[in-house]
Length: 407
Image (cartoon, rainbow, N blue to C red; front, side, top):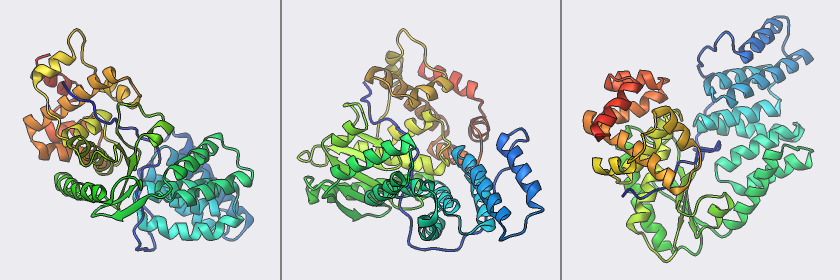
């Protein structure tokens, strides 16, 4: 039977700390939007009016504000290249606009261009006292993503005190305060490719052994995917389930990835094989997210994470999991994995996700599967990536996998 490991709980703040080096950034290329896109239509109107505007005028500041709103729209749609292009243009019209600078910081964080993010963060902090509350709201997101909880709380508290009333942000402020209280007294060390934080009740020797195994897993997965993560991956070890209860994680889940790797463990349990599996699983989520540009389908995300934790299936196990029921289509499987489910439903989804990855590895080789994950980061769709690497359509993959599993 396939033991269920941690599901992918993909939330928006999925970044790691910025490196110290800073270079002045150049504008990032971006794909052309569809003609019918409402943001594109609004942008076309702004640029038409910009032909009559001179820098340094009130009209220039108005243009910057409008461009920043459009850029924020593309940022919300995760069209990061387009967002950075437009926010950079807004900065050119009004370099003192604190919201533009905060949005540029966040955009570069999400694109994992951390040196650029630090460049604009320094500027944003200089302008924030003269900016509307929204600037502090955005800066709180940046700090939280870097695990700088105290700074995130301070930024979001400024947002609240200045009249910010976004209920989502106020809930995040409350949660960040609770998380900060839970993490009080945590210790930390820097590993090769990751930053490890752990509760004081977890022994330093246990943390050191975990760090050693993470180093091994990082090296192996980096070789598999052909890339390192762009900056140090944050890993947080909790003694017990207080944080997991705070974010309503089911009691059968001991690890999650929300940009940070979070693991609940028994402080007296040492480094068990089960804990090693969870660490490898969540680290694989970080690599898949990075190499795919956060565009990998859920079944590939979860299947590769299970594969990297060492799970393997007999075809008889797959048939047993689907006894009396049909497997999910690829689209349905993605939808299932995006929702929280009970343990029995999650197990079926994981069996199918792992089975698909095992089929591809057995039939085409692990190198082809790694290339398949990277294809999404290069802008290819599922259909394009499947055709390029395996000469399959999504329907053909589903059909051949069922034949392979004898379903």
